[in-house]
Length: 579
Image (cartoon, rainbow, N blue to C red; front, side, top):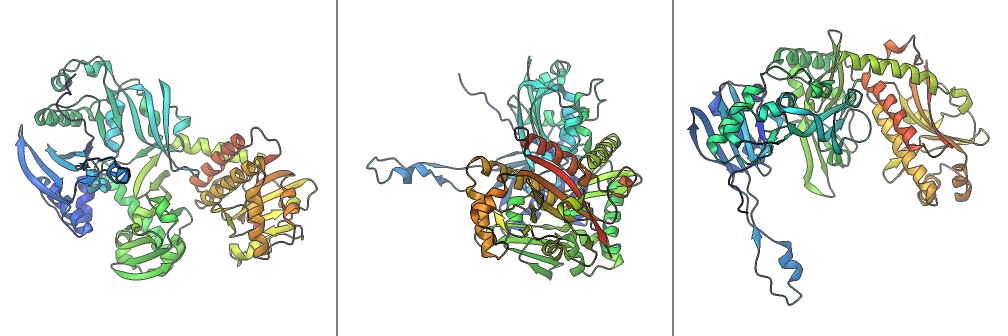
């Protein structure tokens, strides 16, 4: 069968206003493609994409760009067989990267080949694809990609044997970044869609940051017609059985329709950070998390001036303390402060660079509503979700509570930093301080307490109960996974960890005695230090919804981890902060 002519490509809608806000000037909509590409080329210090010309189709402006740095690459098979005596001719392939912008009415769209979306990825209207999917797709989802608000997993792919619906419960700590399903029958019968693809009994639709429909589009005229149709359908009423509505429990704010709200959120965010110095509900990360967290150097600049350099990940508070930001430029500083990371073992290719706003993760409350900020994008949180999490959080806190006296934990003096507290946290000698000692890049415990007969308390400590609880939550679960798996396979990693403890002078126990401790009943404790204990009466004073979500999801993850082992359990331990 001859291959059908045409292309199947992702279609994006560009957040033009977001780009113009960064550009700092107004330009015509038809000039935005050139300015976007120019901005990308400037960032790369070379001409990467060059225009191939512009035209009009049905009165709509289009412009095509091509990556001119793309070069033919010799196949690895050639080198692989060159010493064998087999004469493999020179084989080369060239990976093309193309980018076409389309202006329709007052909107800018783009469709791409290869990795060309990197030119405008910061300015993708991420609400557009999901809004199309809610209107066009059947309720059942075939596959999905989820970005987790809580936990260690940043992203997961899910594939379903049979199409099924996503429930509200599944969406309570999830931003859905990719979904695949089938187009509804009533849209397959739509004359405009049939004019593009012909009669179809079935058609796949996938939404990520873009929209992609299954069949090939045969011509540029039909591509423009498809983009026009998508722009029209997104403003149509939602179907009565809006099965994808559950995916909006955490909903991305539209930068055009909710521009004033986003501006207010940014002003409030800047005020909290730079005026009130409130950073407890915010943390720093980067989209390329593996490069960022593994970096050997972090440099923070403001308008080109170096503010600070760090060998480990800086905290937001450290950056705020290093910056000098007056009231006239609080909001501007979110953009002008740049964090650059690099790993000296790999070179500049493995570096990350973005402004402060793009690094911020956390939450902000305004007008009695909760908003999440993830990698510089704002999300509104459904009120029923907040209420659900709060109820489960309070119930769990009471169920999981373990008195610190049973473990031997001292109170936390308000002037002591975490490192100091960990060295004196236990009021008996049957303990080991394991702070900052890693195995497989995991801190197995801050403190190990074994005074109670037949019980081993594996303690992970954090001052405060806010967004930073996600750090200790991740640490505790990773520790439990490593320890429980290692115990089933002979304890090799525990023995290696013991060697590090001995080398640092943290224990005098023999290797066998240390490993023997882990044959006891194991209690993994998340220890939080605050002035008030979590309870039904005090729950409202713990404002961080992310921290509450972390506890709820950690308990669920731990139940799954220990489902076949009654000797491992998870508890929550309060440490009072005292003068």
